[in-house]
Length: 120
Image (cartoon, rainbow, N blue to C red; front, side):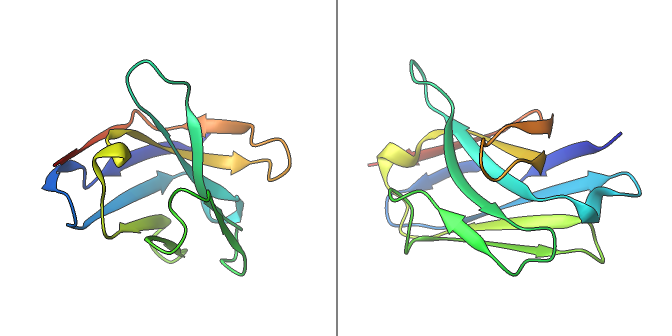
């Protein structure tokens, strides 16, 4: 069993930055591919970025490419999503996912979510 705890969300002005963290508990947490998804009001949950278990491959949604950077520290069982040049359309609840299937984007474990609000 893996539990995920997200942090780092908040309110920021357009053009600003935030760093989200997702701490995973469970002795196998560092063996899993992980990712971030987001859901804005009235929209379906969408893929943001994922990272392989050892950090050697990351992939981003086109909408965040060049602005967001995903990394992980397996010594701390934590992944980080650095979000720069934020736009109002980035406003959403951001969810961390673990044991992610990189082809189907199905995840076994989900966090509770953290709100990111970008004001114009």
